[in-house]
Length: 124
Image (cartoon, rainbow, N blue to C red; front, side, top):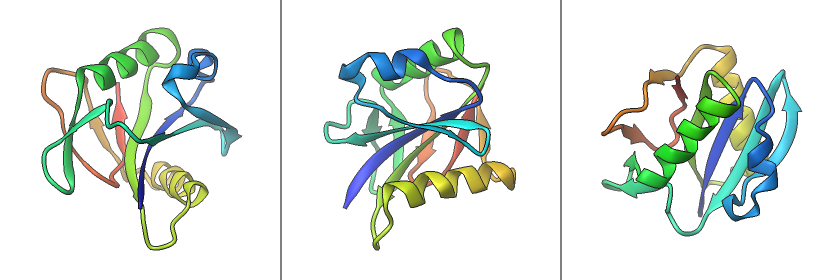
């Protein structure tokens, strides 16, 4: 079982590809969106509240703010637990399907953002 971060934008996010310490892998333009995935081994982007709930850490907030300021007016974000034979590609394709069906929650970056694992968010 692994956790991954999925970032999906309507524009290419150049610095995510170039700054290797961020460890995001670009999957290219899929269904009109640029998809980036990072396996989470250190939980530096989030702080776990319990088994399903988490909040963005300061590092996570800084990353999303940087994306919003430099690359895109919005960013889709999800932390997905890969389990029951679900792979990385299945996870981001599911997120793209949720975007298509408009099944996401819109959030504004502020001090305390409570999030749920395996749910898609749109940050503006």
